[in-house]
Structures are given as structure tokens and as C-alpha cells.
Image 1 (cartoon, rainbow, N blue to C red):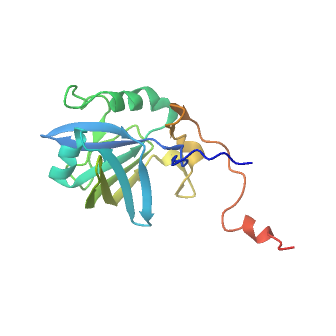
Image 2: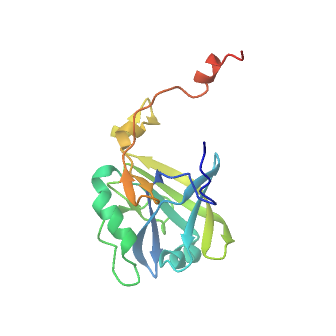
Amino acid sequence: MKKNLGPVNALYPTPVTLIGTEVNGRINYINIAHVGIIDFNTLSLSMVKTRYSIRGIKENMTLSINLPSEDMVIKADFVGIVSGADYDKSNIFESFYGELKSAPMIKDAPICMECKVVNIIDMPKHDVFFVQPINTYCNEEVLTNDTIDFSKVKPILFDRPQGKYWQLGKPFANCWSIGKEYKND
């Protein structure tokens, strides 16, 4: 028998991302796990309206999405619990820039995407940013046959209900293949 939990979001865990922007000309990073895929070229991220980073995102209409690895968990958590309004986070990570000069990226992050903002949805408590990656940078050691191998990335997964970070498990089936074994009896 199933138990009704009410209107609970049951899509956790989600990957931790570190969003990079410049606010008043200073690099700032924030930990955001409410990200999504809209289509092959568009991503979304949701941020509470009071977050300091929003100022830089709206001013520059750019940001970076950095996927930290498990070994970055202390710094990744830290940038999510302190505000850039109160603490200068520009030296926590070594940063670099790509084509977009207002979207700082984290050198140690295995995956970095520099993105332009294409739309902003004003929700009651959050702003939802729709972004398109301009370039994606990956450490070569996380690639297998020139594609991202998440077992090598070792991403941090965020579980809000339990307040825990999780590690990625192992693959157990092939997409667009395992379903061919279905037999309708």
C-alpha cells in the first residue's frame, strides 16, 4: 500500500552546481541544486529572490554552471551557506573565463558551462533563469571517447529532504536498449 505524502517534491537527489557570476565587478559563486534541462540547448536554474548572485546575473545576463566533484564538497557547501553580500568569495576557487567575460568558471571543477541568460521567470519566491550554454569545458580526465563520463566526474548529489550529499552509484542498464527486452504477455 502506498502512503500519501501530500505535495512533496520527490525528485531529489539533484546534482550540486556552483553558479558563477560577477556582482559589482567581483567574482561570486553560489551553490544551487535546483537546476533542470528544458531541451537539448536550454537549462533552467531556480534561485531564491534574496540571493546576492541574482544582481550579477540580471546585470550581465550571463552566468556559469560548474559541476564540482566530491573532493570539492567543503568549498561547495561553504559558498552555499555564506552570502557574497557579507563575504568575498572571489578567492575560494581559482577562476578562469571563456568567451563570456562576465561568467567566471572554476578551474578545479571537472565540468564548466559558460551560459547566456535567455529568459527569466518571476515566481513568488524564486527567479527562474533559462540559460543556454555557449561553451562547455571539461577536464580531459573525465572524458571517455570524448563524452563526459560521470563515474570519473564524481559529482556531488544534493538530497534536500535528508539534508545530505550523496555519491553517484554505478550504471545498471543501457538507455534506449533495455526496453527492447519488454515482453507484453
